[in-house]
Length: 159
Image 1: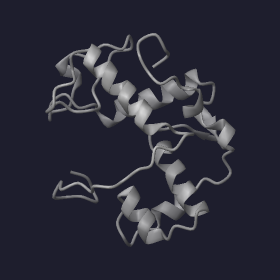
Image 2: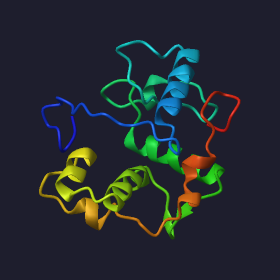
Image 3: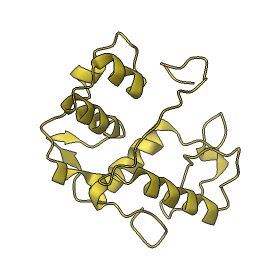
Image 4: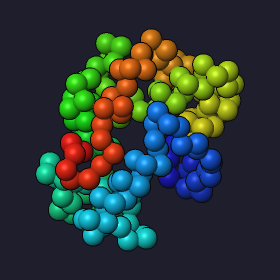
């Protein structure tokens, strides 16, 4: 359930595996890590609470809903990876978990995608201007993308 999907029905969508993002490769690498941890069951969540050494955290660190990561833990992980990539700031803004939403929206703006469609893809309210006022960051140089310096996964890398 989210603000834009109160009935928790989900929104099936197709995402192309862009060469610069390697979404499929990164997702497969994460699933391989979950398998190594024994946390890859079909009913288990994709995002899990991990310790700083990359192991599953005790359930006490999980939310009241189970094993899912808290929002703050996701944000800390994104900031840790951005720091390790040497890019804790992009365009004079601290990298945060929500920074990951800005890139796709900015790309869609550059491609001329209408606000209503960007709102649907970003799971914002259809009437919202958030995609234009908060998540449009055209001043960011693609070479400064923290994800470009993060390895695809496994315990041998910096993830």
